[in-house]
Length: 615
Image 1 (tube, rainbow, N blue to C red):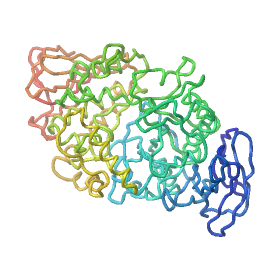
Image 2 (cartoon, one colour):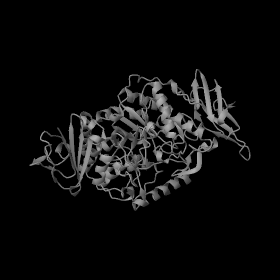
Image 3 (cartoon, helix red, strand yellow):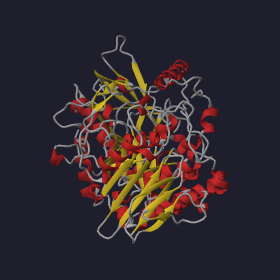
Image 4 (cartoon, helix red, strand yellow):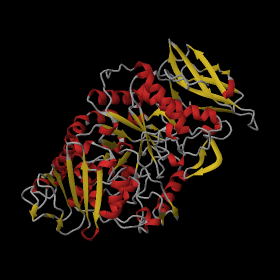
């Protein structure tokens, strides 16, 4: 089937008063559409390459419908009744019929939206269900003014594709096109994006193209969506290069185009692309990028593809002219890992490979900490050198994974001191990369973010419980993980917005606002040319010396990760003045003024603090 850039072809779509339906089901020898309201069954027409087609006036918006599949591969020639794998709305959840939805009905008012340059992204990651007490898109809209005041320029929404029940991180979605019903469904997501653009915020949506969730996953009833050629942590890999893969590739390309075209999303964050297995002559990511770029040209606005990648392999982010896949940016977990170790995190599990302050300096200088040397954790040489610009890397001191994949889901605020939290925030926001803030970290939220589900299959629930326990064995953690199925686990993970206005939480919020303002206002912070960044570890003092520069400005950051006051012989230029001292009483520290103590070129920096100087 030929992809149409201007409109979605897969699934059920409305066009000039007609419902047009395309279904890829090469396993079927007959397909009917069943309309719940009228109990009519409409025959679909077989097309090439396993597609089925119908154009009808008998289906209207919000009608419930399903497919009836008859396959000659079944021993008893049984008929299967299934929801649309490309359903846009599952009003009654994963086990209900699909709901016909007209994507073109929403009245957009974001025509004057001017997309933000990626280099100016200050990203705020949210989980819709726990970001607000209500846990839906409408309540997120009510918090947009808060995010603007904080200084955020882009929100990143964890996956919203329909999952089982009403409590899930989102990575167990089984309807990639359908917007979670308990969050408000597709129309409310359109409304949220429209509101963001009208307030000047970009929107990044987290999508999952490396696996499909376990409960309500009926893809194999339609066709060869999975292949036994490769295994992933979630079972058989999605079929991007085996027999019948063309229909699968089209399905996911259509998905990405829909988010950009029909929901006005600015960027997609592709989950764990290292788990996408594809040895085709043209990798699925490269083909996806080509279609996205064509749509961007057609609509005269940029669209971006950002990837979570557990490989220090810049082939993913190199341009296709350079032989790469053309992704626009990648998350770099290594910055997080070495920052955590520098801040005193125990070197267990995947932290074991990192040496703290020395490796943090390397992360500033080289982006990849491992760029060809031997990794003890991986038992092999790992990574390559990269000269890609800073705007192609996303860094953080915490995110949903590195909080929620702790056994107890503790936030960093409960693991390190208040002063160290400020140093870690400074380390991220002073970096020559795109900074990401995980919801609530800006006020030092202490509520955990734990792993939660709401599956209906008890055997599956028990398997998840056992899997979580096994996951922490590498960290040698005693005790029991919170029950992910228990609603209390979900409720504990909700943000407590009352904290933001009280005590030290309010102080931390003011500190984050100051850091973000400094990043925006200073040319040296805005310049993400990595050649203008130099970092040096002062190992005996557990302190880092970071220089950021542009044509008109030099900024010097001193980050003291030690618990002692450090006296440093640095001989700063005479015209340097202090922009920020995290140790002042203004930010809850012990020092009455922002001025650093200097004598004969020696600078005194308070324990667990950051000093920022500018010329």
